Amino acid sequence: MTAINPFQVQHVIHSNASKSDAQRCLILAALSKKPTKILGLDQSEDISAMLACIQELGASYDEETSMVHPSSRKFSERICLNVQESGFALRTLAFVGMAFTKNLTLNGTGSLLQRNHSQLCHILQQIGLTVESNESKLPIHISGSASFKPITVNGEAGSQAISGLFLLAPFLEQDSSVSIESLKSKPYLEMTIARMRDFGIFLHKLNDDSYQIPGNQLIQKDEVHIEGDWSGAANPIVGAAISGKLELHGLNRYSLQADRHILQVIQDFGATITWNDDVLFVQKSETNKAFEANISDCPDLFPILVVLACAASGTSRIIGVNRLQNKESDRLSVMCEVLEKFEIAFQLGSSEILIHGIGQVAGGEIDTHNDHRIAMAATIAACVTKKPIHLTDASCVSKSYPKFFADLGC
Image 1 (cartoon, rainbow, N blue to C red):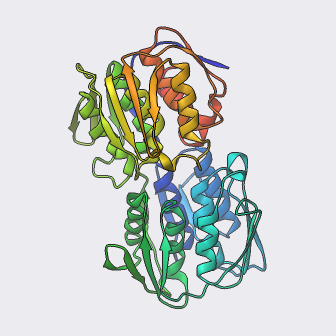
Image 2 (image 1 turned 90 degrees about the vertical axis):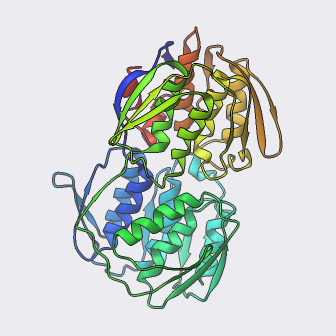
Image 3 (image 1 turned 135 degrees about the vertical axis):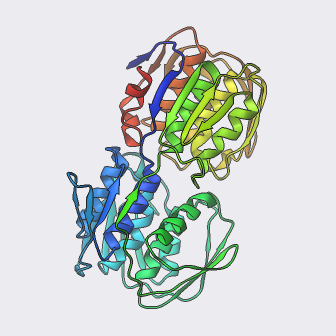
């Protein structure tokens, strides 16, 4: 049990590495024809899991020089990858791994073992692969060779598997044509496409939802800088908006990361933001206005937006909550538990939640359900409580933001 005493955010912080950006760059570096220097990696569990996986595919990483040496693309009879608890690694390497073998087994740990991967399995089958799974749960065994005809994939469950499809396509013998319907988390697919182009990959956008990707491409990038992580940074940003001030270094103000949306929401709440070159300054709100936010493209913001809503004066509305069940925890039900602990009234609809903020929360014990985003949000809630908040498991923040507690001095 970890006690978080009431505190105010009055900090200067350098943002942690974006695991989303880092994982994309590591995959592309492993597929390149020359070594790539990757600057800005950290030791989060998801980044470490991706590093281990690309090394299983034949790439190597020199921590001293920050160089990724690409795989020789030697074909293996069978490859087994353990993605740990990284959903992105699972959904991308399920495709990319098939550039190295005709028999790929993927496994993981923790909550990833209980999550449903039916969208992933279906898209793999659409490109001619045979998939065996435990009712769409891990372990997943994939066999065969990808054979691309023009396909239409459904993105209702998110964009990660589609990112995997796109990352494999340039390395197939034939060209690929992909149309997407009902895409959620579109900014994250746009991140994938931007990084692919950064490494020299050609993609032809036929219209808003259709792409043609030529095969047999060779790629390279001498050096890449990993962006700061807007998902992790959203937590101290909200902490400053409800309690103090923040000077935040290392974020890309023009980033494609969907969680950059947090800036619009805290401004609606009444906080002040300013940029000085690449340094973000956040100043506490004097009005604490209730707000409305749509998280359809940025579901990872949900836990910290619940805390922001608690700190507001009045009823805030968060739309798009129907996409929260298949995460590290069922974040919707967990955050409803948190609201009850915090003694904050709320109403839950089919795709939205109304939260009646009163400017403060009750303290108490919060079950983090081993979910890094729940632990970080509950910590920030200590900015608006008079009693300590006790976390059942604080170590789970290492999945994405290992220095979270050190940055905040908690």
